[in-house]
Length: 626
Image (tube, rainbow, N blue to C red):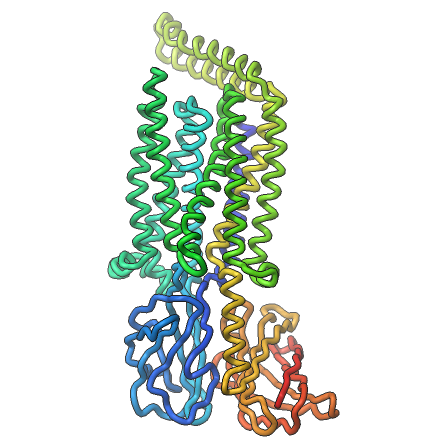
């Protein structure tokens, strides 16, 4: 087995590298509900202090005490603290009376309907904008160390589910004799242990993940009590209860089942295990469906059972693939018929994955623009490509399976039986010598010879070797596919992202205020030089206008650039550029009052952003004024 170990180690390293890269890259995009409107609006200047602040999201969210905070220019809270459900997808918080003039900061942190934390902030002003001492937090909700640990545990829970369900299904449906194989037993039990440990970790980290993000809060039992009252908490507890039933299933499968010699008793026990195992597996899959993407949004009643079928198909295919890989490397006499049965199971799983995947893609993406223009859509394309590669490799595996003869594996079984009989005679020979130490040494030597003989048997059939290489490549692709799938569950769906952008744009551009909003990406070329400038011009008519400029990083966090300038040019009338130097009033927020635009027309708005002493760029976009 020494030659196998480097390959398995390489596969494990690939798993860790891909998981780390994808989880780290996905952390900023974990919010699945988006703020689509507010009253007062972002950057608005109102004459009279409002009595409350309302927020409208793209879907239902969960709030707790302090989920929405409103801070005055000095950083003091001016809200009452108790969140209000205003109906629909709108929520609010009451404000104290007698608020002074100046710029107020609204900070929110809520949990979306599909269990992911959402946070953000914006400002509005009473009377006139002013400087503010409020500093926006650098950490996004669901990010930081706790966010990375949570995403890792999420991946391990998927991997454990795949190994547990798929490995057990492989034994029952394809290779019953595998119930007595120690390597297969370890694989399935490892899946159960990984899923159980990951579920406990998710339950403990949930409160900190959706709240403070502090590592110390993982062990705060008061937060755990709050988590248990939420939908995700109930799903995790249900998963633990089902895993207790799963432990009993595994004990029977690798205990009483593999010891049954009577064919009729074995058939009855197989039927009972198949029914019980299917119920437990479907229940485990439902704990994801009831708390994540499928539980919110369009056609949730249809999406949840479809998601259950999708997860079971993934487990049957990838988990069975892992069990087959272990069998091919550790067992010299696996029957070719068992490999063919798994090939049929894998084909059925691919069909189920295709049907459910098409529905899920339509539900979560909804348009070609969302498929190519959102992070979710691009990840979905990557997943489809990986599935295509995996299907192609599976086709090669089926060809090798067709060449794998039962005669070859039967011959291997005969030789292995002879080796076993020789090993059984070893104790008698040792006892005849009367030397315990020599007997133990002789037993070890013969065990090593037997192990080498078994390895030689495994490598003897060229068709079997080809099948092993093909299945090993399938397993490597499956590792990456599972990582991409996990990242998809932590990425805002393309349909939601586009609907939120459309709602925000409609609110800003066609509302009664007549505000024009421009989103302009920039890249100064230096380190940490990428971002987006969002410019609001109100009322976007000739004469005096109020301008707010927000500078954000690619992940949506406020970007505190050292300098920002704006210029307006009306090329049709050879007018401009008219320079404007806005004032910085908060992290990533700049404003200017009395911006004079003398004529109506299509103005070019040029924004100059400096991110360091030497890195600077000017970007522009056209806007209709008047």
